[in-house]
Length: 336
Image (cartoon, rainbow, N blue to C red; front, side, top):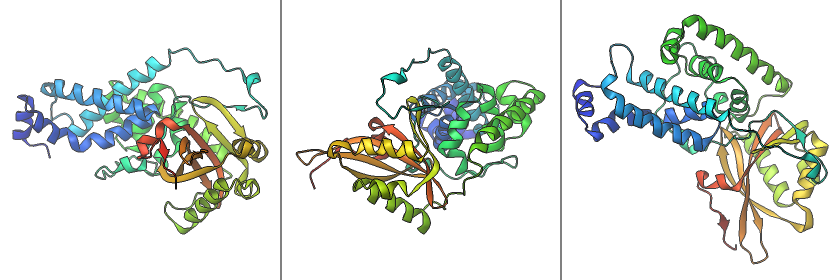
């Protein structure tokens, strides 16, 4: 709660008072920055910059014009917009697909900076979205939605999140972005159309089972057994015909059951075997994969996030092993 005494002490340089004011909003701001940037690491940086800017600019906060939460979202959103625009000027890496062993990956319009978000870090005090919100909170953190956001122009992604995910009114968003309401409405219309086109690719899929349900547990357990046993037939039986495996930071992957099966077969080649440790990312089941070594030590290989459709797997996203510490997973596992 923002009280006159707390605000006065924070403005006078009391860091504890500032933490009491801004701290309760930190986790939701981190999720917001992640939606904007698609990168867990970049979101952390953006939140740090937001808190520093808020601390330094608290004297300019006028409570009669906006709530502290709205003011913090304004700062965070504009920090993220600056980061998005700066990133767009970075030269894209050139990939020579002819250097890959068969099967050759399928080029896709995938954000190379995409990173997973640990479910355990979403434990902020629940803030109900505003009346304008159109997305469920679980859908709004899914990898498919985060990927779609990364393909929007910077202002469109900001407007879509602020309006359709968080439910701010058009006038509030216009104030945050320092544009007109007409500009906000125009950007929102274009953003919705762009996201809808992306989502139509998965329109034929059944909805995923509820998180933590018996149905989700069953398919996740079957996947784990098949992967650890290198049982390719059992693994392929779990996949949809149009399954796609993405591999950020590479802007391509393998599309279709046959190519994904060949990718998996290559993972299990030369007798390679893995142990999986369960996790959750972006509201989806995930696994840390550990390659069994000759001395019994199991070394971190990757994090796989599963996208489910009904009782099948319609997508896998393979992230590099460097993300595992975010999920409390070690770089290696001891001998069993």
